[in-house]
Length: 122
Image (cartoon, rainbow, N blue to C red; front, side, top):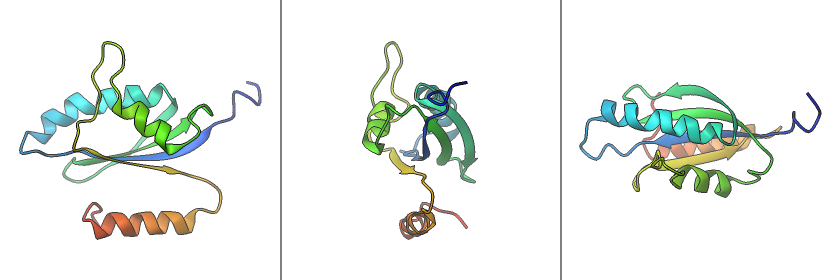
């Protein structure tokens, strides 16, 4: 493996699915595999966690350097691929955080923000 092959941008991707009164288990069964495929298009993906009610999932992604900012990651996730629908619907919420050395304070602010809006279960 060359040094170029080892270059990547680490992202934490949090997705909160819109419950919309529908069956959340069915929604997860349909959306999570498509979401994983879309993330795998960007690089190596690892499932991290799911909230207790299944409304939120987290992934770590070692993204190809061509996905150089969070807006590109969000656009990739929200646009349908050829022959595949988007894993996300209009009211789903996506938070993409770039993980870099020394970002503990940013992560603390992010978790604080998630807690403030009731998106984090303790």
